Image (cartoon, rainbow, N blue to C red; front, side, top):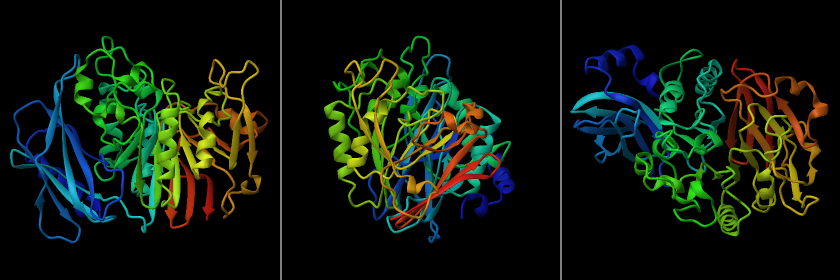
Length: 471
C-alpha cells in the first residue's frame, strides 16, 4: 500500500504540523540513482531540499513485510548558493536492501523529530509486470499539467519517464520551484492540485532544449538545475573534456555554484541507460550540441544496445523526434540519422517529446541519404531518406511489428501544437499512423512478459489511441 492507504492524509498532516513549520524547501522524492542494472536487492535514492542550517537529518526505512524500522546511512548534502535563490542544501540518502517490486515505508527526521513520512515501491524484476507513464514538455504551470499529473497518478504507474523539457522556459532552479515539484509532489491528488507521485515512485528524465540550452550564468545563475536536482545512472559516454561534443557538454563553462552542486552528474548524466523489469532503456541527449553520428558516440550506443540482448524489450528515449508530421518543429529531424542503429539494435519503440501533441508512426525502417548538396543534414535539421512501413500493423494488431515504432508524447502540459492538424491527414507524413493534438495527454505503457500495450490517455481520462505488441 502506498502512503495515502497507509495513513490518512488528515492524520498525517496533523502529526507533522505538531513538529512545527514545514522544514523543507522541497519535500522528499525518489530517484533511480546510479543504479543502471537490476539487482536481487534493489535500492533507490531519496532526495530532499532544505535550508542551509545545522539541522541533523536522518531516515528510517521499513519493508512491507517487516515490523522493524531500520536506519539508512546518514544523508549527504550539497550546498546550492546562487544569486537570486535562497541558499539551500540538496540532501541524498540511499534506501537499500529493497525487495524488487515490493512496497516500503520511509520516515525522514529533522533533529530527531518526524518531518515527513511516505511509502514507495522498489524497482521491479524481469519477471514482474510493469506499468509506466510517459509524458514530455510538461513543466509549464498550466491546468493541463495538473490534470495530467492527476490522471497519471490514477493509473498507479511504477515509474514516470519524461522525454525532455521538464520545466519551462530555461531549466532553472526557480522554475522547478514553481512548475515541477508543486505539481508532482503535491500532498493531495486532484485535477486542480496535481498528485503525490514523486515521493512514492521514481521519475526518470532525458534533457530537452529547455533544460540544458542556457549557458549564460551571468544572466541566469540558476540554470542547468537538471544536473543538480536529478540522480540517475552515470554510465553514459560524455565526460568532461569529451572531444565529440561542443561547448556546453565539455565542462568548459564559466565556474558556477550550480555546476559545483551538480558534481559528477555534469555532464555525464545527460546520456545513460538502465533496466526496469524486462526492458532496457537507452536515454540520449538529442540537443544540437550532440552529434550522434560521431564515432565515439555511435560506438557507445551500439555497445549499449548490444549488451541488452537479455532484455525482452528495448526502448530508446530522447527529446527531439526524428519522425514528426506536426507543422511545429517539422525540420528538427537530425535524430533520423541514428535510425539504422536503432534497427540494428532491435529497438522496439522510440519515445520522444518536443512537439506538444501525440503522434504514433507505423513500424518503420529508415535509410538516410545525402541531400542534393551532399550534406547529411540541411541547415534547419532536415534529413532526407527512404522509409519502409509495416502497414499491416496499422490497427495496432496483436503482432510483432516489422521495424521501430516512433511515439511522440509531448502533450504533458505546455501549450498544444497544431490542434487543427489532427483533422487534416493530407498534411501528415506517410509514416504517421495516429495524430492527436487537441488535448493534453500521456502514454500509459503496460509490459507483461512478451506483451506490450500502450494507451494514450487525455487530461480528462479518455483513451484516444492504443496499440499492442505480442512477440
